[in-house]
Image 1: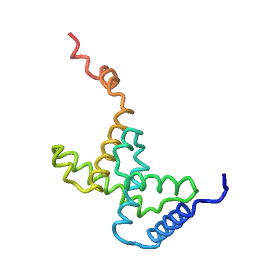
Image 2 (image 1 turned 180 degrees about the vertical axis):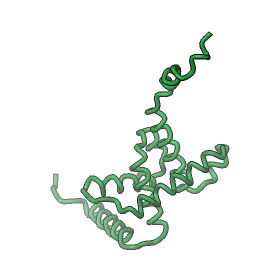
Image 3 (image 1 turned 180 degrees about the horizontal axis):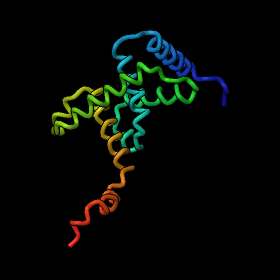
Image 4 (image 1 turned 135 degrees about the vertical axis):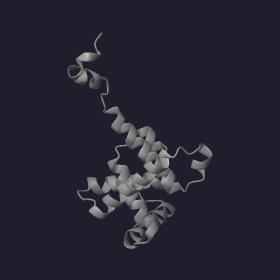
Length: 146
């Protein structure tokens, strides 16, 4: 078996790296939006099940944000702030109670933001211990006892 790379794979690999460099070099609106969402997705601490629900582009954005952090690069504040704005937008979308059919009509970007907002909300909810709230307030309401 030859140790050389298949020429087709080599050509594809260089094309992918050129495309990645072009996306990094350009500051087009769509690329910036996905980068911002990737930062928000990375900070949302999504479960594996939530990540699977993302589009391929959303998973790519998430992985790029994670790779940037793993490489020691800090995400810039502008991207982080904008990413949180996308999550706030998605939380508003989620709060209006859209039907599944209406959600399917959303853009891929909006659906990914919505999945991230729901995942982040579930992650926060898992950390809540609501059962203890009643016992904490019991001392301040002795008149309730019968």
